Image (tube, rainbow, N blue to C red):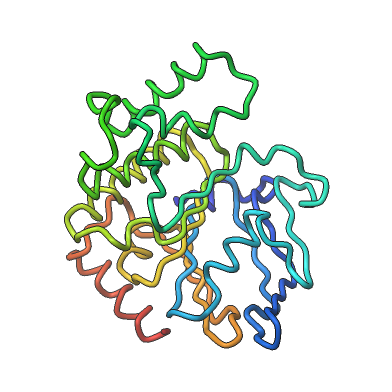
Length: 253
């Protein structure tokens, strides 16, 4: 049973209804509506220019749509106050070069009411989770691409989010490192039960990670199909069932 089936009776973690977005004369999103259940992993899949990142920005509350509504944990975005429990992982790792690994991870906690000791404990804990405790005092330029991605993931996780939003965070990694990060994300998701929405144009990545895939078509961005995945995990890209779902989705695109 996938995460969506387990939690379907609960209030949606994220609900978007009738989202429309226009930048000047360019219509970017049209009539987007869907819900994401608590603990579900949802992929926003589509080719370049279909509004995936814009839609993620709307779901995060960073961008107010021209039309439509965003609800988080049953509360309208306009009245929602617990924004610190929503983490956003960008395509670039955006590490601050003048800060050590632990200082980069701690950055998201500096605006909280946690004491210095509590922040330090949180950072130590999350660095252990992503396997970087031995590199706490390293500098970003000393890290590989995969390690930098782990630091960015740790920085997102240190706030203990209920919802993690990811904008093609692994797209710049080599295939082997990307596969390792997929495994890492699924392991951490199993431990935390957080809700995950991620943007990708990689069909295989969507099939390997997601409980449900929302396929978008471009100009303007709108939902073409919603695909539920009941394949057991771990999903090996070379397995016949996985390759068949990848083939089917490529036809959708």
